[in-house]
Structures are given as C-alpha cells and as structure tokens.
Amino acid sequence: MRKSRIIAGAGLGLSALLALTACNSGSPTDPGASAGAGGGEEALWEVASDVQLEGSPTFDRATEAGEIVIGVKSDQPGLGYEDPVTQERTGFDVDIARWIAASLGFGEDQIEFKTIPSANREQEIINGGVDYYVGTYSMTEARDEVIDFAGPYFITGQGLLVAADDDSINGPEDLEGKVTCSVTGSTPLQRIREEYSGEVTERQTYSECVEQLKAGQVDAITTDEAILAGYVALEPNELKLAGEPFSEERYGVGLADGDTALKDHINALFTDGNDVWTALYEQYLEPAGVVAEQPQVD
Ligand code: GLU
Image 1: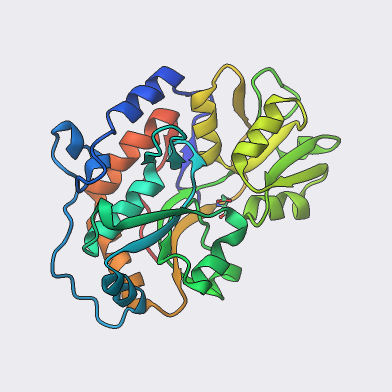
Image 2: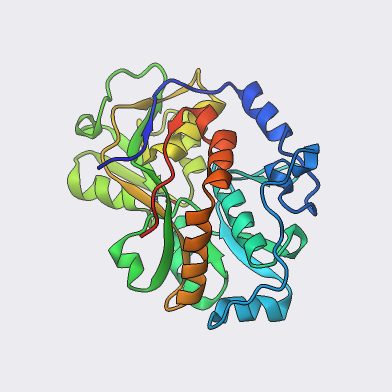
C-alpha cells in the first residue's frame, strides 16, 4: 500500500523556499542548529554524551577518529542540498543524518559530509568511505545483499517531471517516442528501462537531468516524486509533476553489512523520534507539497 503522496502543482515559490532556508541558518557548530536552535528556538535534538554501542565496528571507528563520515546528496533541494555559495547543507535527509550523528555523540563540527552520487553508494559503504549514507536511498533486495539498511524512514514513489507547458505526458505509458533522463545506478532508471518504452538517457545527478529538460534536450525526468517536487518548488513556472506515482520507494539509511548494533540503534531512534521526524517533514517537505507519514521501521 502506498503511504506517501504528492499533490502535483502545490509548489512552493523560490522566495518561500529561500525564506525557509534562511530560518535554517544556525551556526554550523550548534547542536541541532539546522533544526531551529540557531534561531533561538529549542533544538530538536541534543548531542548525546557517553554513548555506548557494543559491537558496532562503525561506531568504534568513528569514536576512535573523533569524527563521523556521512554520505549524502547535494543537488536535491528539500532532501539533500549544499548551497554552492555558503556550502551550508540542508534538507530532510541531511538533518536525519545529523540527528543520527547526534544520537551517537557527534556534533556538527565532528561530521564530515561527503557527496556521493547514486551509482557509487554501495561501493562507498563497502569500502568504508562513509560510516553511513542518507540520501533518497531505496531499500532494495539487491542492495541489501551487499550492505544493510536501517529504516524505512520515508516512503515515496517514482514519478515524472516535465516542462510546465507539456500536456503530452501524463504517465509512463506516454513516454514512447520521448526522451527521458534518469540517474545511473538508480531504481527509477532500471524500472523505466525494463517496464516502459521510449528512449532513456542517464546522468550522474538529477540536477544534470533538470538542466537538460530546461534546455529542451529531454522530454521528461523520472525519479522519486519527493525529489522531483523539490525541483518544482524552485521553478513552478517551468516545471511540473506529471501523472501518478508508479512504484513504492522506501528510503533507508545505508550502512555496513552486518553492523546490526548500528542498525538497531538507528531503528530505535526512528521509532522513538516521531516528533523530530514530523518537525523535519514540516520544515522541508510539506512546503513543497510532499504528503507523507512516518513509516514504521522494518
Ligand atoms: N530512491 C531511488 C534509488 O535509491 C532513486 C533516488 C536516487 O537515485 O537517489 O535509487
């Protein structure tokens, strides 16, 4: 059963999104700053002290190093975004990542964020290049064979993004004779190739696909609606969602295969943290028209 839904067209203007980002500009060293502490509001979480996590190689490594390395996205507004000027990272996924870090005892100045594209996620986790990954990462059986997932913490579905004045595409069946852009190593790319007709071109990031769509080089972009809604929110006069979601994408936190202690810790945090989840959802996703509830973890 689908648990999330996006209302197409309920976009948020650029100025509103910028205003949102502006409320979110606490000092990077404040615990929970990105979630409101910087503006003098109450922090959504505190950095835990004296954390004990028996049997987690990831936690042991990070504790030894005094720093935790987190893989994220940087070009997905509302989810995982890095401001090109200020380098400030914002978004639902990025704050979920900060919240997990704080629960493990790591404050903002002990986090190293690494931007990792979809195609490289499993390998980075396997290589130990990141301690965990939070970036629109669907929990799939194939991925689960080589890494572990905590969650799900969010559910969305595959959708289509088209030019605002294009009425010829209203679902994946309409892609025949069209060119669709998606991202290497993503589940939407695989699904559109295997189950629908039409030409498909792939890029490393969704923002590259958006540039191609705006330049008229492709007719559509396909990926999760939660991601696409973030682009629509920035440019509602140029872009729109088309049709209904046609898959279920359950977002998990990617971590090293077999690190059950870390997985259980994160799942317990999600289960007990509905207030944090709701605050982050209301801050980052609801304004872009993304409708969702917190799912239960597996
Ligand atoms: N959720 C999908 C996936 O994990 C698409 C989004 C992405 O590429 O991050 O493949």
